[in-house]
Image (cartoon, rainbow over all chains, first blue to last red; front, side):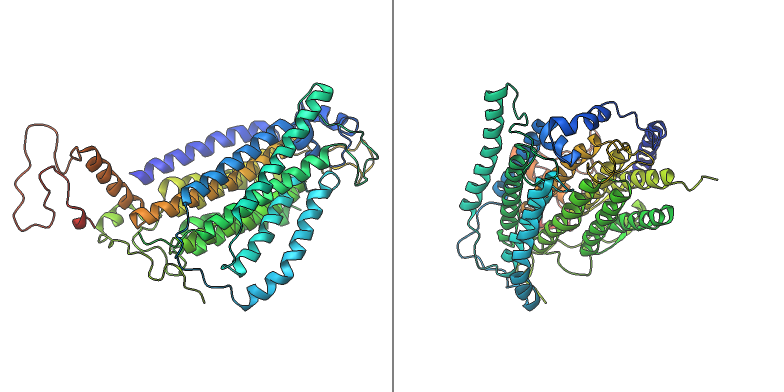
Length: 229
Length: 115
Length: 166
C-alpha cells in the first residue's frame, strides 16, 4: 500500500514539475532582475565575477543568513553528539598511504583553498568554495593522526572573529553610507587582485568562517565515540 | 554537446537509482557522491562555473566524507549490507512473509576495524 | 517521437533526480538511506533552478573573457543555488549526528523497529497503555484469551515485555 501511494505521489510530483518546466522556456529566460544586474555590476561593485558580486554585494544580507544557518547546524551537531568520555579508545591511525599523503596534501590543499578564496572576485570561486577546501585540508590531517586532539576552543575563537568581522564591515558601511553591507572603498581597476572594494574582505571572512566551522564539525563527528547501544 | 550531455545524464540517473537499489550502504554513499559529481559536470555544460565548483567540492567531497564518518560511527562500515532492514524495493507481501530480523547487536569492536 | 534536444535531456535529468529522491525518501526502511535519497533530491532541485536561467548562445557570467556586451546567462539563480548547496551539506551533517545518537540509544536504524520501540518507550514514560489494535481493539468485544505458553504475553498495562520484541 505504501508503495502504491508513494508511486502516485511521485508521478503527481513529476507531472507538476513537468508543467513548470514546459512553461519556463528553456533558452529564453525573461531575466527581469538579471539584465539590470548584468548592466550595472561593473560600476556598482567593480568585480569581474558577477555571481560573487551578487552573493556578497547585491544580496549580502542573504549571505549573512546562510552563515547563521551553517553556524546553527554546526553548533547543533556538536551539542547533539556530546562530550567524549576521557578514557574512550582512539581510532586506529590511518595507514601508510594516508599518513604519507597527508603530509604532502595538507600544504597544497591550504594553498589551493586560500587561492580560491582570495581570487573569488576575479575567477569562479569565492568564500564558500575555498572554505570547504580549507576544511578538507584540516580534516585530512586529523584523520591521518587521530590521537592528536583538535583544539575546539581555538576553532570557535577563529570562527567567532571571522563572523564578527563580516558584521563589523557591514555596520561600518551602515555608519558611513546609510546601507548595511553596501560595497565600500573605491573599486580600483577591474581584474586586479586589489579591486572591488570591500568584497574580497567579505569573501575572506566568509571563507575563514566556513572553513573553521566545517573543520570543527567534522572533528566533532570523528571524535564521537563508537557507542555501544 | 548533446552526446556528452546524454552520457552524463545517463550516469547521473543510473547512480541515483543505485542509491536506492544497492544493498550495501557504503555503495549507496559512493553512488550519491558519483551523482553529485555528474551534476557538477552538468553545471559546467549549462555555463555555471561557480555552482559547479561548489557542487564538486561539497557534494563529491565533503558530503562523502561526512557519510563515511557516519558509517564508521554507526558500525555499518562493512560490505554485506544492512542487517535487519528490508531492502527498499521489496513489496509489502515479501516483507510480511520474511522472518523478523534479530535485534541489532552493538558494534563488535566499536567500529574500529580497519584494513 | 520526443526529439533529443539539450532541453529535453537536462529537464529529464533534473526532474528524474527529484522524483527518484522523493521516492527513496518515502520508501526507505533504513534512516541513513533516507538521508542519501534526500541528498540526491536536493542535487536535482538545484539543477532545476540553474536550468531556469540558461540562455542559448551566451557565455558564463564573468567579465573580461569576451567583448563587453556579449549575452550572458542569468546570474541570479546561480547565486541562490550556491546558498542552497552549502545549506544542504549542513543539514546532512546534522542529520548524521542525530542518527549517531539514535543508534547509540536504540541499537538499530531500521525504521519499523525504531517506531515500535519509540512508541513503546513513550507510552511507558507517560504511563498509559499502548493503544494498537492487536492488543486492545476498540469496542466492547474482547480479544480471545491468549494460551498460557505463548511467547507474546502482554503484561497488566497492555504492552509487550521489551525482550520479547523481535
